[in-house]
Length: 305
Image 1 (cartoon, rainbow, N blue to C red):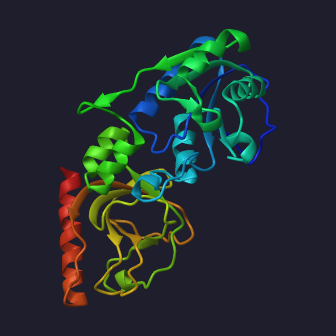
Image 2 (tube, helix red, strand yellow; image 1 turned 30 degrees about the vertical axis):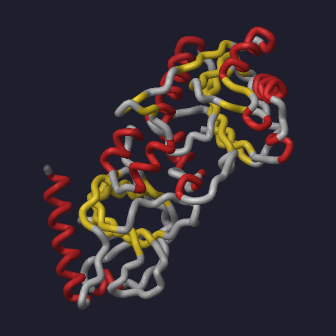
Image 3 (tube, one colour; image 1 turned 90 degrees about the vertical axis):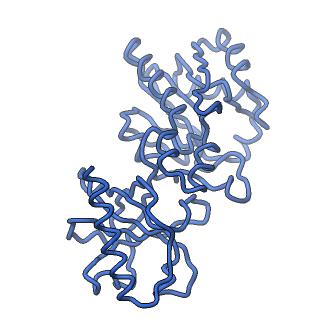
């Protein structure tokens, strides 16, 4: 995959089919866009392009403003999908103020676009004044085919990033994973912790995230860690570790079952599979150790089933 960022003058000489959006979470609705784009590529020999932004175009305060997937996590998913080009557009004042017609003309010429695939909720241009009807109206003028897809629905609602966020905030990991079509995950550099887990014979890896990254509610989760192409069962704690720390700082700590390698400085993906229990304060480190061993046994049995 060719990854392009921080450039507004990039061009592609080959014929392409493109899909555009924020793609936060890359849920099943986004997957339909991707599948349609790949099918058009197979039919016509077009190269595939995903156009997204380096920051959400309309950042919001509070939980709804948090992202399901960081830019790195999105790149990880897109690369696995087999897309040819990922264009991460800088959200500059020029882009924010660009009229819809000018925006379409720019991407069609710059990326040699022959087909554009979007959903019916697609909005673009200055103040999102353009929509899928604008895209259809401009097709003949700029010489591309427009494919507009209906939203996928579940439980009487459109599947959307907001829907997924709601379920993750509630701790409904299994429901969120159904909406996504894959397991919700986090990815970041493994950092040094207090190494308490190692002294207890239960080593863990630690990650911290920016405040705009959405994390599940504090608690213990059955999880899976991807390392060098292999999957490992794991137990993950999201929270502030109240038994051993008073900082209140939220982090993600994971014990990888049956793994003994060194992951400091590496960036594994930790997938959340199921909520196990809330985070708790224990009377002693020995009580904490006993509960951690019980959690490992529970998750091992769960994933084996």
